Length: 334
Image 1 (tube, one colour):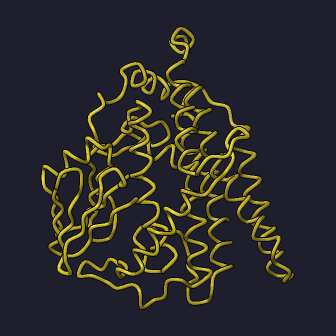
Image 2 (cartoon, one colour):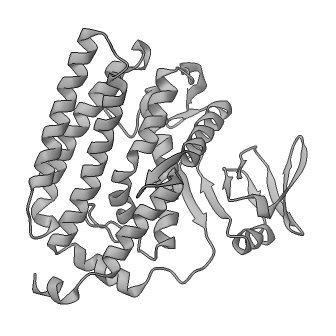
Image 3 (cartoon, rainbow, N blue to C red):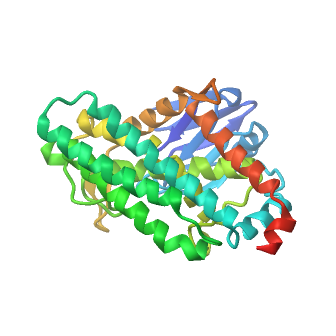
């Protein structure tokens, strides 16, 4: 169960094995055994006793800003990342193995987007729409092939080239999505600080996904702050930015469905004093609900049915195993 604490002045306390949520309408007790995550919004409080219960029950506590973007988290202490994994992550930045790993992430990202567009295309009969989508898909396939064929000794040699191929494929994808949306939802480009509904919904979903992957990164004993493709920056989880490339389709499929079905309207968004757009409480609940419904969907991983969240963890675990088992002698000679 995901518990979302968002009402102004709400307080979360502990009572025996329960979390007690105090809001203006009354008090609600929830067994800690039923909770997997708790999201704390601004102007809400959680006691230290409640936090300790969350740690004992392995409940992920996520603190959000007023726009729903993760600002911090509390996780049970597990010793942090493994030194072996950390050393090997640092080596990846200077080896062909790092380039190959980044290529896999980007190839998965573009391949997932192509699959989504082809699935949409099967239900389209309008000649102009079919032509438009097919043209963009071919552009994306061409950029994907360039990524697969690229050879480099380290990521510094390949970074700008890969970013160029990725950017070309990304423009073709978002042109397709904008073309398919209702007229009032169309957008000119993919933007982080956006005013249109689609980009705002997608940014919100990406934020949840970033936090989820960061949590899984710790569970796999990797260091979320040692990236390969993304340049190291203070307090930025650059490895999370790398791995999320292969997982972005989760947020993108949800954002497309929300917008094409017009589940969120312009009146569900408002501009604050800083000129940034955010959602109404009802719209936020809808987006969060759609995200966690998606994560519970069953998909295949190595011929076995698992939830999307489980598959994401297993994919990251495989990456961690590869990093942990790297041959130091070979890497040192590179």
